[in-house]
Amino acid sequence: MNRTKNTNKKIERRKNRTRSKILGTAKKPRLSVFRSNRFTYVQLIDDENGKTLLSASTKSLSKKEASLKQLEQAKLLGKLLASKAVEKGFNEAIFDRGSYKYHGKIKSVAEGAREGGLKF
Image: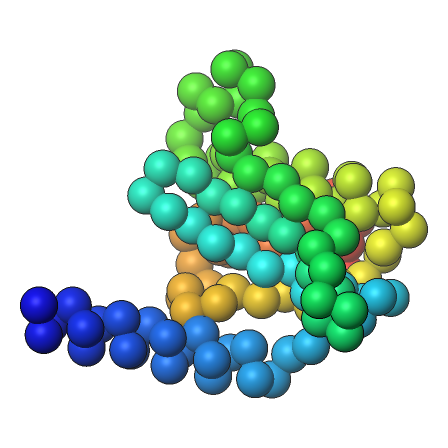
């Protein structure tokens, strides 16, 4: 029990350290990434007003896309969110990796968003 408590504190500290340096606005929202063991979720957030502007997840992918590997799904997810964002008029965003290292699914989401037209 104590080990889990310490691990959660470490994760929370890493997340706070990352988030203290970035702030999303209405013109340049924060692209936040959350990954669970099964799904990946991304959101564009306006921190000034406390609103989520856009969101997407690997749950919303088609069956054909859902059969791909998780890294490929994450890249598609980034492209999907970027295309939605460009339609709504958001060309720039601030990337928020949260408490995760910049590799694997997190890196794939960022690459997909860049390919989709978002600038970080």
